[in-house]
Image 1 (cartoon, helix red, strand yellow):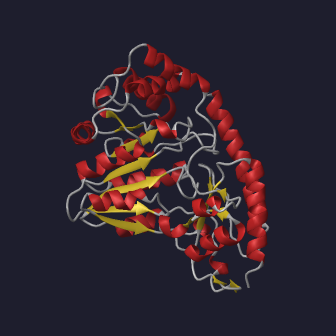
Image 2 (cartoon, rainbow, N blue to C red; image 1 turned 180 degrees about the vertical axis):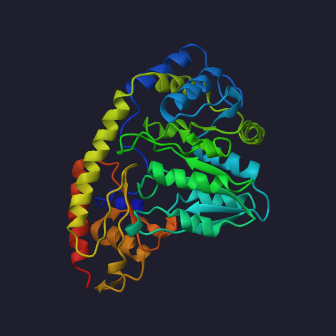
Length: 376
């Protein structure tokens, strides 16, 4: 719909994409060019080029207090493929996967594709969109195989703090054959000062698969490079699975990714600082809109307002019954594209990506304010 409106000549501001608006840093692009010139254009080993696997091993130890042997690391064509490899390797028909909601839309679909059942545990803005450990405990059955979540989270930006992660770790340790899949793709866009990986707790060191990649923290979305650190038997299963789907990721991209992990992080630090400034700009603007509930997320580049106060309102031919209606109204009336919370297991909310210029964000907030003021 947004593309159609643009084609009609409307100035649509899109705040819907989960993609940094920054270009890949020059030093990483130059590393890829050098790799091409050096002949890295051939097939690669399924688990990844040795120098990238080694760089990931060093990164896990340096940044996450995670120690993996090289044969516990698998490079994939994006973190999404990593999640698919894990699910298709570990899940059988009838298994259950607890997904902490709001959640990235792919989680539930990959679980279903593997023949298992997603068990969605919801949380509210009053809980900062984090599921309390007691609710997780109550959902565990003898069929529960995995607990799957992201921190920092897409779509909410919420970050599970150290004590919250430790509580989940201790719970998982109480149950045999229960594993954690921790999606940490937004690790470097974290405003808490120190990212914590749940796999660093001794109780679940051998029960956790840590998923990460290069798309968010290095603005490398189109490079399609993700990776996992996992217990050896899970890593080996993922290698077998990936070997039948895609084999290894592209060679020159892997060489550049290895360089990215070992180079200075100035570009990433600058991106994080810009995102933090934008976050505060968006929170300040949205908080002034009557009926819109906004929290203060500690990571990623999303704001996830609760707009349930608008349900039942109307103006002209528009009636807002749910988040889908609200998002369509903003698109048609304000020409601002956002994403309904229904896509993420949160029917009272919508997602704004602030991976856009400050100018566009300010204009979008102005339009949203004007459009919502018409609803009564």
